[in-house]
Picture 1: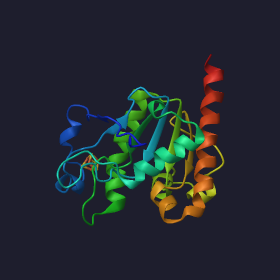
Picture 2: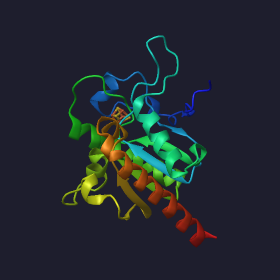
Picture 3: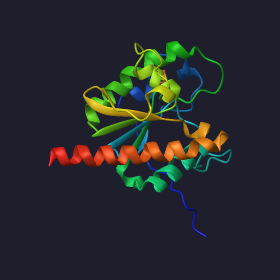
Picture 4: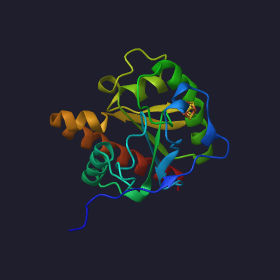
Length: 195
Ligand code: SF4
C-alpha cells in the first residue's frame, strides 16, 4: 500500500547561510535546514524548528509533525504542492540551548526568506512562533491569535496549534483543521484581489 504522506523536497540554504554560526545551535546541528516543499509556493508555513529528517540508518523519514500537518492540510483541501514549510530556527536543536538568544539570532533569516519568496499568505504553528513573530504583542499565544488575521512584513498571517500539540491532544484536531480551512479561504481571497 502506498504511504499516504509525502516527503517534501528540502531546499538548500543560500550560499553563506549553510555555514551560519551566529548562534550556539551551529555546534549541535547536522546541517542548516532552510525549508522544504515548493520554493515558489503561495503559502508559507512556519514551524518552530526542524525535527528528525532521517532515521538512524540515514533514510528520509517523515516525523509526526509533518505527518499531522499533511493530515490537517488534506482535511482542509490544501494541496501539498502549494506550500513551503520553513522554521523559526534553521538548525535542529539536539540538547539544551539559550532559546531566546537563538530565536533572536535566527529571525533575520526568516525575514530575508520572506522578502525573497514573497508568499501570498503566512501561517505559524505554535506559541513559540507566535511570540517570536509578535514579541511586542501582549498574549501572543495561539489561543489568543487564532481565528483572526494580522500582518507581518506586509503579508497576511494567522496561527494555529503546533502539530505535535494536536497529536498529544486530539481534541485540538478540529480547531487545527478549522484554522487550515481559514488559511485556504484567505489564500483564495488574496488571490482574487490580485487577479
Ligand atoms: S539557528 Fe539560525 S542563527 Fe543559529 S546557527 Fe542555525 S541558522 Fe544560524
